[in-house]
Amino acid sequence: MSISKKIFAFVVLTAVLCMGCKDKSKPADIKEQALSLVAENTASDVSITPIEHATAVLDWDGTIIYVDPVGGKEAFANEKEPDLILITDIHGDHFSLETLQALNTQKTKIVVPQAVADKIPAEFTPQLDILNNGDTKERYGIHIEAIPMYNLREEAKDFHTKGRGNGYVLSKNDQRIYFSGDTEDIPEMRALQNIDKAFVCMNLPYTMTVESAADAVLEFKPKQVYPYHYRGKPDVGDVAKFKKIVNEKDSNVEVVQLDWYPKEDY
Image (cartoon, rainbow, N blue to C red; front, side, top):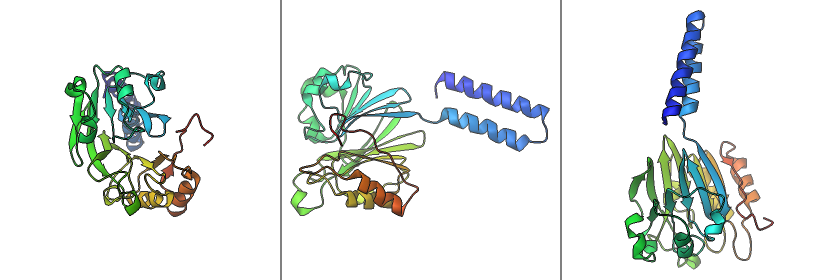
């Protein structure tokens, strides 16, 4: 917690408790109010900016995270420079060496699977954290866990082979955020626990159907799910149908729709 937040929390707590000295009849209520105010001020603050398709920018308590940055430097013209970059896979909608070289990443740590590291020139080596499935790392107070991502359907297995790419679970201050990367409804996804925000792909032929995505979400039950990476060939994933399936079976899972395709009508 920042110094300013600590000071604010102390002032609020002191003020409310002082009020309690004047009103002895409600000490429990006053204590609950004070603790509630402090809790609100110490919780992690995460803002999410969709760039396009699989690319996003997170501002997590002032730490700037780029997920799968592609699209050139101009795609991030309105964003702060990254402290942390996460890359899930080698495909062009997730990894762009040109974009990486165009961005100012001198102070950036870059988290990648080995397959991506093999495609990055030596100039970036000191910045790389190479994580394979199951590996973990902590950067900027954020615990990073590499989660498997791969295809299950026989006709799609060559798109994403098991062990090549990473999904990621990011954890900080009891908040957990999951980016699926390109995957189907694999057992490792279904086994996730205590996820607050889940970014789940759904496009054919590369990842999975909206039905499979919804079924997996209903099993691991994140508090919020963000459909992303839903442009396919030839069809776009039906995110409205995804939301309907999820909420008909579990209204406690909030489906959050962001604009992942600002240049398109969908």
